[in-house]
Length: 391
Ligand code: PMP
Image 1 (cartoon, helix red, strand yellow):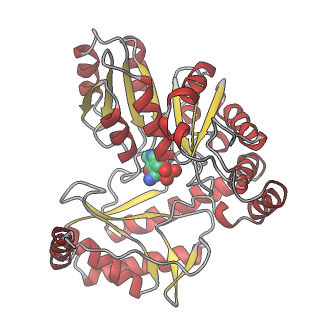
Image 2 (spheres, rainbow, N blue to C red):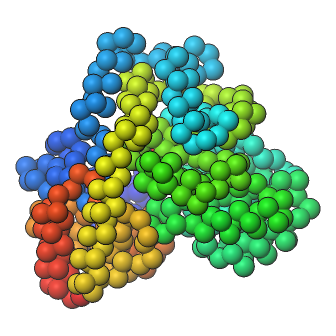
């Protein structure tokens, strides 16, 4: 049998360069501390912003849904896989986001791909921030529209892109609300103003803002008071919401169009009832247990302050996503491994997740962390940072 030996060679190259990273296996539920191997570690690398993955009410909602509805749906949404639970969740999401309608996808990734690949054609152009998430990049690869990438949050370059493309039928500007690797927030009010000036449509991917920014975690549109001025809001149910899935919130006709044309929606089985029921519970909890978000931001301020005092470069972050900028890939991987030995799990992020030479340790504190856990985290960053001469 001919084998894919070229892949083995490539893996060997990565090992030699010190950039190969094995999968980390957790032997416990997600939380502020997790068991990796037999070792308890402070978890600084999850997207479980509010700790909802293990909230008792979330578990209970999933258990009850399994008892009532079974473990799977047995079909794609468009054939026989839409349960009343799915529609109920979409209703709640639309009301939470203050939009006419919402549609749930299997993940945030497929929501972005589903929208971008389906709503544009050859007559259109999509204008995208250079640091947008991979799922936006892949969605753009699948559209027939022309593409124009603008420099990261560069309003001058965005305006040039809008001016250059006035002949297009539709100009769709797409941006992350919060950028996933740097934690900065898109200048949405200015982007909206420019789009209104040039008659462009806006799409915001709020994966890292849902449950984090805005009143009760309603996202960047709410944070900036831009309701009714952003046509497409994408969100995820896999991060602060604590479960799995994505959604598109917007007009009723957008929802209906996607039901007919978005390929991940049409051709992949719908969420199991347990997933949908616990997402519904999470949307309710955001509105009844506001202390989770308050604690998340308190913890964020405490942790960032500790790292800054030590002299680490945490880039341009304005949110709980806190990168510790390292630059060199092998050094970032080495730092992550050393931190792990000290009981802190903080993953190195290297190419292709970030561009070459921009490796970092990306941390996200959650509402579940105690101050003592964060203090220990900061202490270990100090120890390892000095040992590796990063600070
Ligand atoms: N958009 C952004 C900005 C993200 O960071 C992510 C998650 N990595 C996604 C979309 C995809 O979300 P999901 O994990 O729900 O597929």
